Image 1 (tube, rainbow, N blue to C red):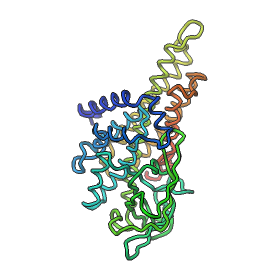
Image 2 (tube, helix red, strand yellow):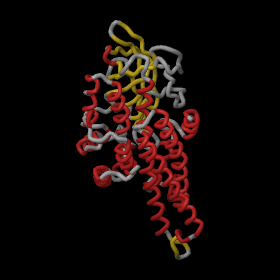
Image 3 (cartoon, rainbow, N blue to C red):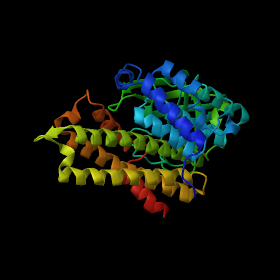
Image 4 (cartoon, helix red, strand yellow):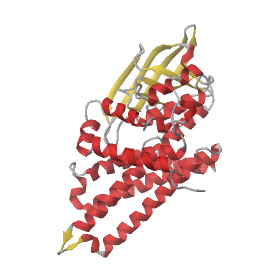
Length: 374
């Protein structure tokens, strides 16, 4: 199998790299990421005009990419710039719509691609621990359609989203694989209450409470009680995206650390000439290449059968979690005390790498899942 990117993907990566470097340098990124909204609507629209969102979707859904390697290319570029705009929500919600939506529901994908709609997936709940099948939020059928009640936690960009994809239980026990349904919920619907806050690594999130939110019958995405497969697939695309984003961040941390070793001097010589640091840097380079292989394997498996796909995704997420923490620790240590300062971009890359491990399942969760799938 040929794992080299096509010319179109290389051009997309180059375009995104130039755009992010020119429009969102680290000072601008930090002002956006740690600001009141945790994203920039103007920058989001520019990404849409550039075609970065369209690359996440196949032509049948109005995009021009949509393969695993397209997602990897886009998110690796985003990771290099620590971009906080809501690409992840657009990807997961959009792929769920493409998988299970009616023709009318699929028309919403156009709003995601052109940047006019910010979407977020609301699945995790207070007290949950990455369990795919756990949903305490309830949806009860009534004469108007559905009544939705419950709470979702740590919804990425949930305070800025206009469209929420919410998992809710329509039958079965709280952790039953059967009985989970997916609903499209306007964020401004009566009964939706959002408490937004900033994330430690930049960007925003929200806890969202649904108090007897009335939804029409057309809010149901897919078949009632059979939403788990669609949810798994949507989260799978999200896992691939996060792994690729982490890879981009690792590449920058690696490059910056190598440059520091070549320029910082002690005893009149660059510290990179010290054998102990050379060995540590060589180990780091090998680990980053292993992470790249894991992401490549996951991207290639996205069109395969379910078990192979999910094992490849869990293997990649486990690998990224372990190596991301290692890259963060080693890069900061080899920079010395300056590595932890706010002014040095490395500190922000390190925070993002550590936090990616806790998003959509951490290292321990995906190791256990990989074994269970085997």
